[in-house]
Image (cartoon, rainbow, N blue to C red):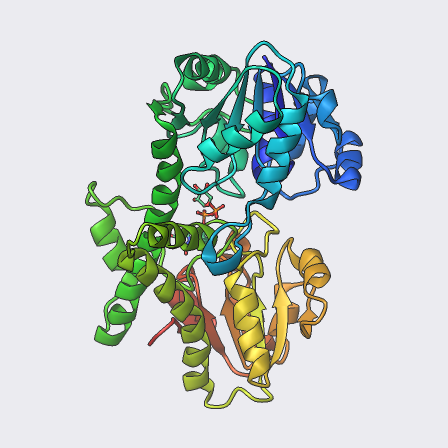
Length: 446
Ligand code: UDX
């Protein structure tokens, strides 16, 4: 099928590359000329495992352009995957979505085009986008919602091997077209990329066909649930710390109950990233428009913010004074396998430490360059290695769960440090091993 993707961020680029890999003819559109030039030249502007290889493999089927008219007229399906950043009062800023809808409307020429909202948009946006396109369109179209559930760092795997595909549409023809588009994924009939084998036991992928509003709400409800699962384990973690219980054992003990499940129960500094904060804020804002409160979702947000404060307070209690201390942070990205720094807990903690007069040394395997670029006014001391971070440090805080930090030569780290305090903000370090290395391992406490 002929497909256009508007927006070449994480979602757009991943979707485009995967659909092209499956054999569809994909044109990616972005208004950022330099980004399009880099993509045309084979460069991938974001760090995402396997994306470069996938784009290379799919190269004959994928084009990049800044011109809507080169893409939309011949497309059977148009995905809108533009950014929807948080605007005022927590509601998303829909400027880019509006511009994309008008541009698509101007260029529609096909017999029947399905326009798919892939961006996370407030409930009711499907109808809104439809009305915007109608103002301009001279050809038949229908709007569908097809929320994405991809995690950064695992975006390709989540797209090719998803738990489910959700399609929201009030029109049978639209649902049928999207079924055809996704058929290779639904039936898992494509040959798996050599660098990303099909997970063992992977069967057919369930397709949820729903109305527009339901599909839109699925996305928010899923992300809010994951966010509150993390905040819940963090709240229990605080109590565990007080009563002398081990939160990892508690998480294991509850996670083996299949009704609860063991994923997203990793306690620590909490969630960051572009989705959980934005989507929970949007859910609360939408509910407010309808005169509803969302106390559970709001509590999840408060607990998450409190974890960052708690990290600094835990260190203050341990070191007594933060002013003039040297603190090392391991990890800057909001999670491993990405250089994304949006709402990264590490940066928040770094700011709080700097405000209290500490010196902050940082390391991240891939996000340092981006951090330097995006935070020019933050007086961080960037270190090439984790060992360098430890040099003269009064404490080291593990902020991002990069596996390489678990496997560091902690004996060497201990030698470099001024005092042997390590705060494990992700519960990934082994206590016995750390003690053997002469380190005092502490976790977040209230
Ligand atoms: C999330 C959703 O998982 C995905 O389905 C949606 O489409 C986009 O938002 P993402 O933000 O990429 O994906 O990352 P995710 O893996 O969900 O992690 C989010 C944050 O939660 C990270 O900061 C991570 O470190 C943290 N986290 C995750 C925990 O603190 N504990 C956990 O148990 C899991």
